[in-house]
Image (cartoon, rainbow, N blue to C red; front, side):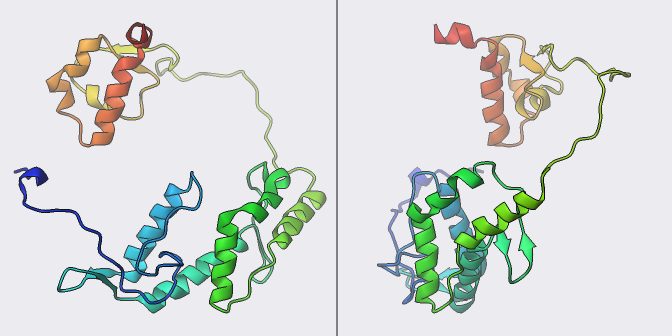
Length: 236
């Protein structure tokens, strides 16, 4: 059975969090509201904070349905403080003797851009508000670059040759066109897009082949896959 929300007499409303303090997952200036992303490309971090709210804070709608209580606000406070400290000591944590030097290659060039980062400021101010010492973030750079100075080669590779036996599996560079519905959903809708294509544009509408799909993700991959061979014709 399916249920269409358009047939349900309901309306969307915003309800506040019953919080009287700043816990990073909520808004600093309005504790009853959720926090919002500080830059244009941090929606994944906001999703993480929401998951943190649900997993640790354990929200529950109040009996009157007009607000949201948290079962574990104190635990959520402890966790967000630990996360803030973890992110500010991620590369070099002298207290716990942890070094993570094999990071993005832009680390050396871009590190000091943190001074204009709204998230660095947010984490630092959050720890100060909780009366927790803020780690000296410049030591992250010092710890990692010192490792680079004494470790001349960061990566090593074994010797290899281009000789020897090759696998008997089909050449992945030569496309195989699918014209049979048997196994088509797995070949066209999952991780094999690099070697399989629909034999023609209409094959993408084959109901028998589409029955093998188990999620919208597979349907989306299928839809894109069937257009790849005909992209030049479609855009003209």
